[in-house]
Length: 324
Image (cartoon, rainbow, N blue to C red; front, side):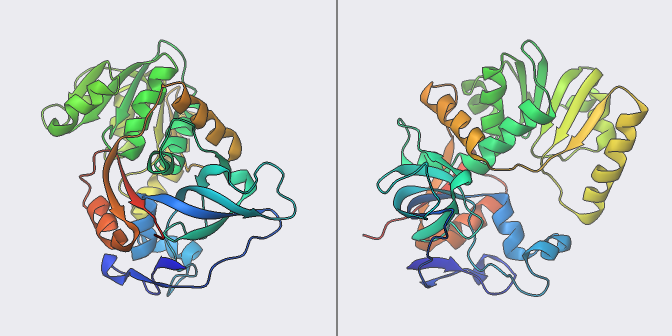
């Protein structure tokens, strides 16, 4: 099969479109012909091996897994002996740890769900990591409730565009923070208020929020606390991924949370069948829809990763995968 392969860390130039062995499904896995995949910041962090601590998981000197890609959508070709939920011909979407930038992939049964009936494969592939990060960040870590004032810092990216819609589906009053060119999009997605960060610093304008969700956490933990209400919660799901920054978030956040009523939490999304089904239901009910900035053919994955890495994508960047 064709796949995007990298055997050393570096810029998108290390990504190669080449032939590799087609995988075979284990007993609990589903063998899928990929129709679409999407690109996430995690992909370029793994590609570059940055920040350096990520190499403790991906390989110290060279990548252990040589195919990028977490989000996929496609058709089931075969299933392992222990798989009960899926059958050949099913249209599915979910998360792959073994490389979604390819024509075929094997995915554990518990990381898949049936594709939303009203979604294209590209739209379904845009869902898993970004939408589950927004869902778990708001619902589980943020404990979102109807009527709360919720602020989304970094509202124009893949996670942020889903977070606006998901927060609205919970009945929250949503404030989106984005750049000037994304103001209209945030309003279209349902934000009640929009702050242009090039004109106003929400951490210093005197407003307070019950929940701040920061998929692009460029402010310090002290800035976020200043903008929280007395019992508010700040959930960080990304941003400046330096070792020092991660260390501060992991140590200082819990410490400050114990010292007062304001809470700070750091999260990492976990793809699972239950939440994928929740997303499927939200899409089919019209409550959320992916914002797709650009689509590239699989062979141009390096260009897609480079574009996402520049930081100007409005929503998701996807790969169209076709063997024909």
